[in-house]
Image (cartoon, rainbow, N blue to C red):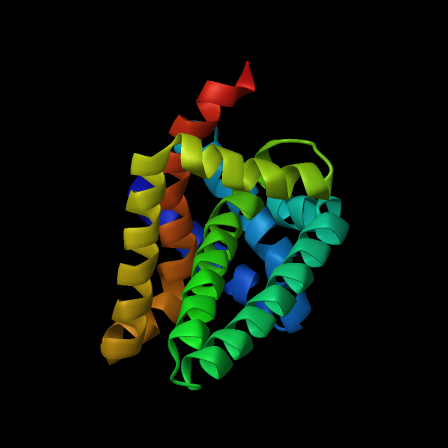
Length: 192
């Protein structure tokens, strides 16, 4: 019964996450709220899922939304420039495209860590984004594991139809819960 209750709570939590993501610019705040619950749950605390989600969304709305808008804008600019320079077909343009691709990877790593950091620690947005890169490179094995899991997740969503349905019902909350075990282990090093 406890397992079924948790499954139902995570299905409803996933639906809340998707609803709060509908105005696309609120994705960062919704992710922060989701991680604020799943990290507590993975740490052994039983949060009141729905009230905690709304509280986490409101508490982190400004910082998380600004972080998401900034990261989405930078991702768009970097991807546009990577495609532009890659299609010129010269050694110089290829070198620029490679440098921009490295910058894009830094942005992806920052994206993976920023929202759990916002959910866990009180900090300025600038410091949170700095810490997202700093912590990622201090914990390279976990960062590589998280990157592989994210790539695997995206691959499954786009390649298998049933997985897309699973994600709509359950997946985002489930994967956030799984990732939360890793984030709790990493963040435990910095809590003191």
